[in-house]
Image (cartoon, one colour):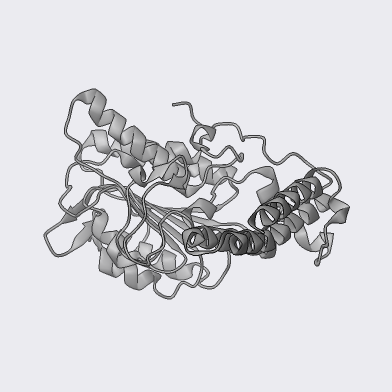
Length: 357
């Protein structure tokens, strides 16, 4: 029985490939081709630039901001920059401006909001803050401002002492990155430099699908930070974390080999990284042409496959392959439908790098 189920699953997998590559018309498309096209709307990219202090840090933060703005422009995102100085003629302070900017963004949409925080941070043992010209922003304040948002959210806090922001901001459908693993890593963090470069580079495309996910950028940047301290012969003073399960814990990049997790969380917790793997600022050709409806359906199927893999050791092998088949067929049909609508344009060609490392 197990052997026959394996053969049946192999036949199904081969059929899925044939559907995708040979005759997309064989797929049972439930939606019209027109509904699959047109692409999704625009993501919002909010770059928050803190006070640099010393001139050398001001220059670095300006450079990182410029790089990320270029990535956002190529992604055709709605890019907004707050800081490092208050615009001439503005009233209030940068903290007020940041709050009003967040409040002006659409609260309920399927388009993601990306927030990048570039600067320094502090932690007094109780409260973590992001340093800005004027009053600083605490993790609790930012959490309150973001609470009304009902949309996919990625927050990348590249500052020192940023880990408490992960605890404060963690939640469903959110990806939180911090440059440090606790609030007491107070030295200047280099993580942001490598992260913004990775987001605009095909070198960080570890699974070679023609686009770099936030998970891949996190893994690449973390590895490069480790290499920096190793080459310099210095004790690492920053250890980046990623959380996308809402458990407020976060994991380091050494949990992954490529983009596959090699460690498992304790208890019934889901492994981090799965939602982050579906966040792409720069999308490949096919991803750009997908409607939000198609993306959401694809993401749901991917998550279901991930969860099925988690329970493989608890299942009868025949039952496992039967359930896997039930997920793979609609997954293949979804891409076959899109392939039919786009008349088979190659979607896996990597985008040109924005920056050379």
